Length: 277
Image 1 (cartoon, one colour):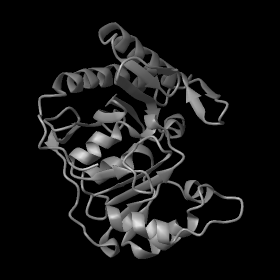
Image 2 (cartoon, helix red, strand yellow; image 1 turned 90 degrees about the vertical axis):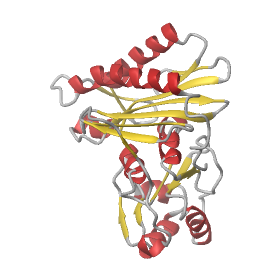
Image 3 (tube, one colour; image 1 turned 135 degrees about the vertical axis):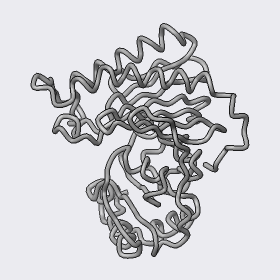
Image 4 (cartoon, one colour; image 1 turned 120 degrees about the horizontal axis):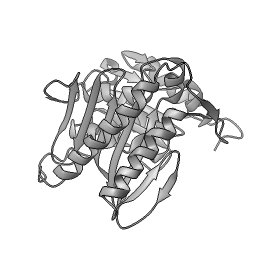
């Protein structure tokens, strides 16, 4: 997805303001539960964790959307889909739940508006970091630290894989998806590799501090809010094969200049093991 800064910057302004309002609601519910001694944790059927903070954040945001934007649909990680019209709010109440329950501050609420399946507004609010990032199609990508005046984001200008910084998220993800050899060869090629994890990798990309982020086994609510921020900062966001979609189960985000190189490199170095498709 290419940078869309030439589009009408006012088109999504009211939706962005509403998304930021939703982020304030989320922070008011999530931050007081971070490191709470009585935090309630359970395991979902897919073996991932959910806390009482996840469910409280999602319930509060969904109620606010239904009260103020009744014509819009909803898709939340914990409560599922309510499809109505061509507009849908997509929510991950706490991205990085495992970090949240272990007291690691790398977690955030992800809020997106998708129109006809395309994310056009995204907000990432990380109150434990004291940071918030947002973007809307045609309006640029922005960050605020501790509630200070926002600063505009821009991806890096790195053009060569040998000079790039990669965040690969999880070795197991790549292995389970049949791309482990691609990851190993990519780490041997880039300048630096780390697994910053979850939303933070993509925000570092939008800030120009990381050049490539890729992961597997992801859902639309893991990605939708990230797309407008990355693309409005000048980057590209596709699946691992280069298809411009947040709905295909994998993600590749880059500074744009490296994108086609990474898509080709990953495909050419994939070595599929028996039983992996």
